[in-house]
Image (cartoon, rainbow, N blue to C red; front, side, top):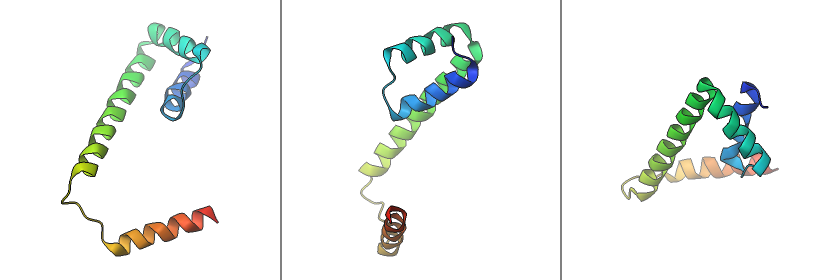
Length: 83
């Protein structure tokens, strides 16, 4: 059975990848037994949902414009990260 630290790591990893059947089962079992991890998981889902809504709202807002200097600075930073 997972401990709380392993559970929080799996919750975080679930954002980046699909958990295996075994991981999902172990996570669900721990969440049934641990009210603190269940609360953490619910807060995590609420934050994720809020961020998705905020991102969608920003993407749909036609009045938000990024200055070309900012775009160039971001592109330069990304380029230096890749090299």
